[in-house]
Length: 286
Image (cartoon, rainbow, N blue to C red; front, side, top):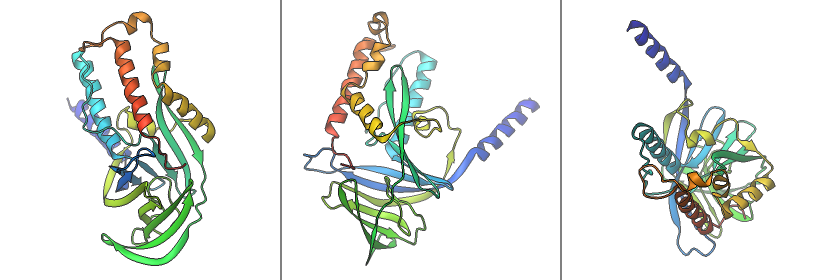
């Protein structure tokens, strides 16, 4: 018993040492999902700023990831699969990281490759040509200054604050002498507004999850052109490669705990993904 307690003690020490401090900034992201949308949709995005990098992602990914892990663990115990229920799917499935101080950008997204999901990504270096203006105003608790930018085929109006001494911002944006706390394109298709922040501890050993897959050190890195070509093909038929690897016997068998065949279940999930991609056809970068 003493040896077991000692082992658990050292495991706990290892877990604490694996944790890393970070500043988490919450942004309200408003966007038009399609080019014909008349109304804006909203979600919360987060920017985690650590010592050597930042990670930008949809906060809902963290919520959904927790629900998916619970459903998987429950299935292992009971033998019955109950699809996780969430009030909201993730708006953005991608994750963007910036390495400090070089500000090299890595864009990663998750896609099915047969039975195994893979993380596909590309890397790029962006030299943002900001025009810093003299205009200032109070945004929440911070004094902010105006800056203009042309990027991705859109004109952007940003407000940054040197009271938050971070050379960073939401999405791919960075390069101002203070954190970007508000940014919007001139046509009002997309906007990010800082909604809050807090200090957090990030656990680098937090299980094998979807979110950890996206933040893993070994994504498949390809050229930016090949990345978008691959994803365009994937969005046309998201589950084609998965079905091609399953035998007719498996496809015609019943999902555990559900009155539906595995092939039909895969088709249903594929239709949902395809519908989502069709409804979200207004990219930030044209």
